Image (cartoon, rainbow, N blue to C red; front, side, top):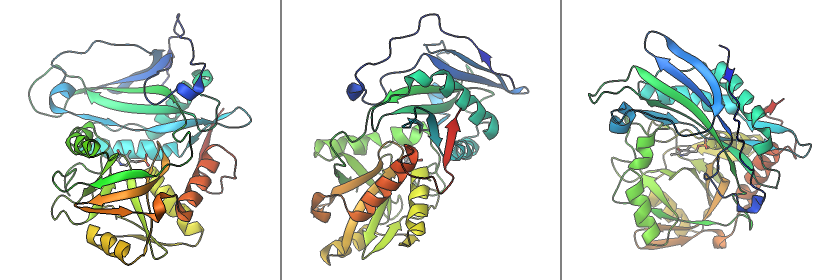
Length: 355
Ligand SMILES: *Cc1c(COP(=O)(O)O)cnc(C)c1O
């Protein structure tokens, strides 16, 4: 499919102070759009000026939540060129989310081609300062004007881009995490593994409660027994216990993070003992009491590695590694960000250049 291009006639001023970019507020001049119509398939791919667009008040996504999304970044490296980190994995996951939400799948190769074209066009929006990047948000939603419940016949796929600031401006600050005992995020057979808006909507109540108690994020337990650890708000979770790197296995209720997968591969390549298995919150508390809980950290595209300094479960507050970043977390952060910003060799073949 050929991508039609309509350039903006009123380009916006680019942010000059990159220390104030923050996250998710600023959008570039153009966006990618493609339609799906039953009988026709995906059609009319185009890059057009970024802007508001009309949809019907009856659009099905607004009523029944048929929506999926992805999140990845473009990085500017020292020679000025731009690169992506494992973008094929994002489009593969988009299709896995699509299947669960009865949304038509996309051609992954075409999506990568379209994304590269868009990023290339917006290259000047990729910030230059250390730690900054261009956040990429592909998403698909149902547009049929119909308030009956069924899979839609019409969808829009869009990609929008947002220059974002360095996640850690003052070094890797450990986060405070609160174990959620009341609400659950996902159950087996549900949508936990899909990157869909609904999973976030139902997580907000727990998140709000955590904030009230001065904790930054929620650690979710399994939806049935409320015993086994699943993941954090928008991150997967890892524990280092007695030298073993452990993360919950993927059983359908956990989002299969690309950072998670990459962290496992890096740990294995460095000879760490690595396990994907069920791990109960009691096992973690016991390890803590026995002085064997060496590190806890989250993984996700936004922060890459986010060390956990405090973990609160009921009345028990665990202070991990003296609220400092541990050696495994630091090694993973250095390796993965080194590959992303091109300061160390990409031995895994994870980088996709924009040329
Ligand atoms: C996106 C996401 C993650 C992290 O996935 P990455 O591919 O590593 O960015 C983890 N948990 C949830 C719920 C997510 O939506």
